[in-house]
Image 1 (tube, rainbow, N blue to C red):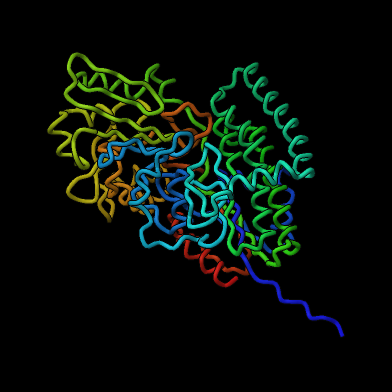
Image 2 (cartoon, helix red, strand yellow; image 1 turned 135 degrees about the vertical axis):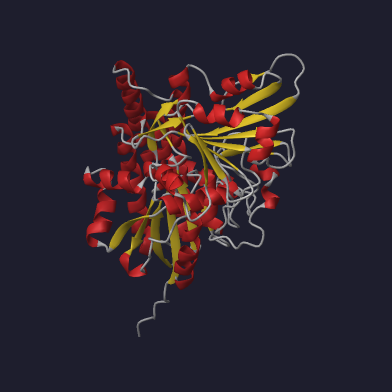
Length: 488
């Protein structure tokens, strides 16, 4: 008599492709860079669904929303925490652990009891490895990271593909960099190095950890791949080298899909693919002016020490009467009067620093300056000041429709404006419908408002019946993914 086969358990894998907009996903599929994703769309019942990630369009904000359903008080990629007197930043030298106790209280993470691989947050799961680029704490299993890396190095098949792909990737990136320099096209050299690191090292480790977690039969697995985002910062989101990176990501999605039913863990996985935000082409603020935003502030506030994070320090003239911290995240800048407690409203800023708001707003390359006021907030531009109060008046509506749907964007900005961690002045670079003025040295950028940076995607089966029209914040994905996880 034949022995009955035990039914396979169900599980969920979420593959996060950092920085890829819905529009660039469509371009990559059309140009043949993602043949397996094309197959999913054409024959496997998947659809690529655009959604709005919210403001700011950064990975810490979006990923917190996806993993916890809560991205409040995360105002950018890096910010100044007045209470802790601390620069909060992710990446190399991450400091988020020092303020993490204030976040996600009472939230049940998407990956609880599963694996959260190369994410900025632990999310209640086994942290498979945490290269210096990602925020990391002690794993639930203290040797989880070391075991994964050791297993990778001892796997001859993984090593063979790593060595083969690494050589090709190094040659391709070096060639693209040389072509760009010869053609006098702009490149962001720091991100060229980051692109190499992520494509040659981090992507392979993340993929190996993902497949390993599937073989262990963990029910919920979230894995983040940052290579496209780094390449887009270095060369631009539509550059041929950047799009070719997506072949590597496409092969990872294919391998995970092949492992969906054949994993040794005995789990039948549903697989969803998503991005957290997109990117747009940029023009550096410093290229327009020959100087940084912080240098203007040092001119207008000569008795203050001005510190730009991702920039310079201006010591001021004589004995400093105050301290200003300026944090840059792509096309978004937060200006903090660090020695003054709490977040100043527009009236307090004007009283203490007469004319400063107007000076910042009139700078070429500044699209909006947002501040608190007694109502829903205020926007200052070169043309004057406007209220964010809903329903929007015609002038505010006309201003915001340059970037996105005015009513939706107004709600997103109003929410950001309620964050105690936001700057006393929140500054958005100009967006002309194609390029964004950026405060960091990047070819492709995000963090601000306008264009593809606000429009990532969710690759989902049509039978899941996901309705995306009402998704205006990445945290709106959390209940959808939790329901999918729980059905599995």
